[in-house]
Length: 79
Image (cartoon, rainbow, N blue to C red; front, top):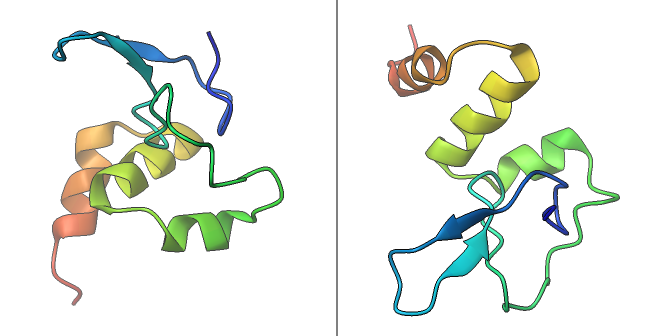
C-alpha cells in the first residue's frame, strides 16, 4: 500500500499491540488524520519541517547517496 502523503511504500509496524502501517519517510501512521497536505509543498518548505533523521532520508534518497554518509555530514559542525 502506498503512503497518502508522500507516495512511498508503507511498512507494517508490528511493535504495537495492533500492527499499523506507517511510512518511515514522512511519518504518516495509518488511522491518524492526514493533516499535512504535502502535494503542493515545495522541497524547501518541506525540508524546514523535517527532523534530522527525516532530512537525512530525504536527501540520501534524492541524491542517491548512502544514508549514513548524509547523516554524518548533517551532524558534522559547520567549518
